[in-house]
Amino acid sequence: MTAALADVCPGALVEAVEVDDVADGTNSRARVRLRYASGAGPERVFVKREGRMFNRLALTALGARETESRLVASGLALPLEHPAFYAAAVDRSRLAAVTVMEDVTLRGARPNDATVALDVDQVRTGLLGLARLHAAYWGGPLPDQLAFVRPWQVGRVWAPVSWTSLARALRLLRTGGHGLLIPPGVDAGVVERGFRGWATIAAKHPRTLLHGDPHLANTYALPSGVTGFYDWQLIRTGNWSHDVGYFLVSSLSTADRRDHERDLLADYLAELTGQGAPAPDFAEAWALYRQTPVFGLGTWLHTLSGGGFQPLDVCLAVIERFATAHADHARTWSPPPQRRTGTPLRTDHDEPAPTGTPNL
Image 1: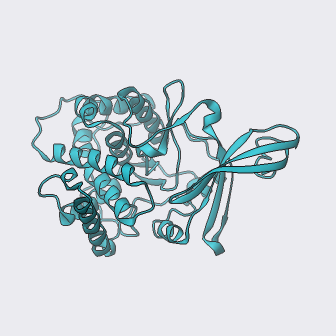
Image 2: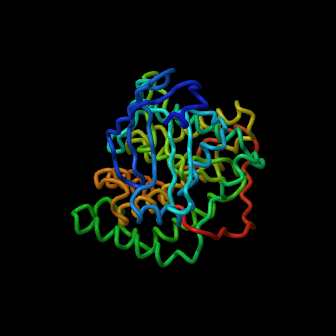
Image 3: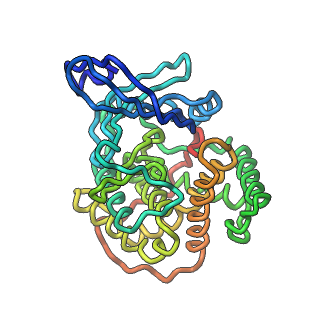
């Protein structure tokens, strides 16, 4: 801990640590209390390290085992609310990685509970933060410090595995009495095709830097009302609409989403323009956003099928939001208002479909 804090707390000498609040999910996470022999530093830090071997192998397949640690080690500033990063290290021989970061509860932050939807203003502040992140890297090459960040990729070779996982999740929902969460006519084949089709779109231009996994459970609320993002393991390059759709749909109640999603999308586009990025036309952005829920639905069905990655109540709450949004946007909508906020979005329909490991 002395070494981890050396850059931000020069002269601080940690003489004792106390580990508490250990939680095991995809990773192992804990708050660590610190006592100093000399100098000064935070009274607590948040430490994240590798979880059980199965989860380590799953993260390896996703190309996500070391990503957050490498982001921390890059020293790059991110233009949105997130925990301050202190230090990171990787041990490839043990499939291990560790990150030491700020315990945001010391600033009065409250980790968001995925079973409780955010209000509209909380989602708006999160979208504005994502817009600043996206604008900073819009359409251009990433800096050398981020050379490790991969494009969004889902390989066709994984389709049978994906279908099997989705079928298992749907069976678990039915046998558990939750079958009505899934819209009529939606089966493993429908979700798999939509999941894979959306992943192809998510890799298209204009590409930017994506959080990659900005669902509600990866956010926190500051007393000021600002929404922050943590868990940067799935950082990717790809289309802006992935982050926007994934965050917005996972975070709002169905009623609030139906009432406010158009306005929230317009606010995101306006912030992009204000940050100097060539934001897409609203109609084209709306058409992309409407396609995003099936990816979230597939992702959380995979999460349910895998077991142990998220609690059951969290999976059910988020699956319901994505399933309802998918059903809503599969219907015929009236044309959206033409609210232009920048240059049209390039679709690049002739770009080859990406290949690689799935990013679930």
